[in-house]
Image 1 (cartoon, rainbow, N blue to C red):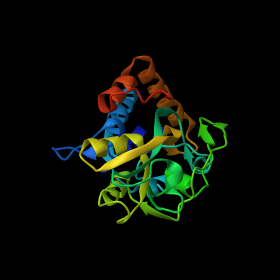
Image 2 (cartoon, helix red, strand yellow; image 1 turned 180 degrees about the vertical axis):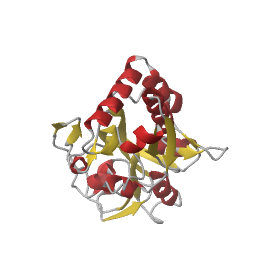
Image 3 (cartoon, rainbow, N blue to C red; image 1 turned 90 degrees about the vertical axis):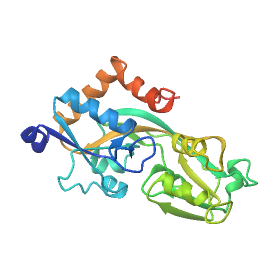
Image 4 (cartoon, rainbow, N blue to C red; image 1 turned 135 degrees about the horizontal axis):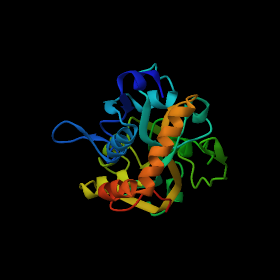
Amino acid sequence: MPYHVLATKTLRVAAGTDWGTLSFLNDKHELDGSDVDVAKAIAEDLSVKIEFVTPAWDIITSGKWEDRWDMAMGEMAPTKARAEKLGFPAVYAYGAVVAAVHKDSKATKTSDLEGRVLGVTASTVAESYANHTLTQDWVVSGQSDAQPIKFQFTPGKVRTYATDNVALDDLRLGDGVRLDAVLANRSDLRNAIKAGYPLKELEEPLFFAPSAIAILRGDKEFSDKIAEAIQKMRDDGRLSKIMIKWYGVDRSVEK
């Protein structure tokens, strides 16, 4: 394991304060969410304490960690490009990316978004989809599975945001006020709608992406230990329970 983990018996985990159900600040101003529960379970299995840090998403995906954390959450899609800098010990969830529009929008299908102004979270597979650069070249534990993907529309303009929630905040202002649509994680969108956002989801998901734990490349022992911890959580049902607790469905399996 990384020297810091061995020396201090503490696992430093990167998470977000505004990542929707994944991780957020609760009423006690403490990090909470599905990612937080998964990370705590991993630390417990490794018999170490846990410490959370909250860097920006683009810093996490850049691989420029500078020994500030040991492991990153965020349901990161394990793409081939990211695998040049990061390691992905295990997939722990599957996410659907969907198109959202304001409830007053005349759009009824994703092809209606042709030429429109689109909001996405920066440095995500949703941004890659919007820019037609996404390939489903998922890489997990050294294995890759490249598949073709169908782009259903070409945006007129793509605007990037720090999180899905910030993009959805702009979309809620009205149809075409700042955005015509947002590509977001389906769970984030449905939580926003449940919270009263005047939005609607278009059709079926644009694509599904596996979500992996991320570490820096090169530490096989650490990677193996995280993979083992996630497998134990699958086997004893803890991973399923965490997903059902936060989402009402088991997102630890692809469906």
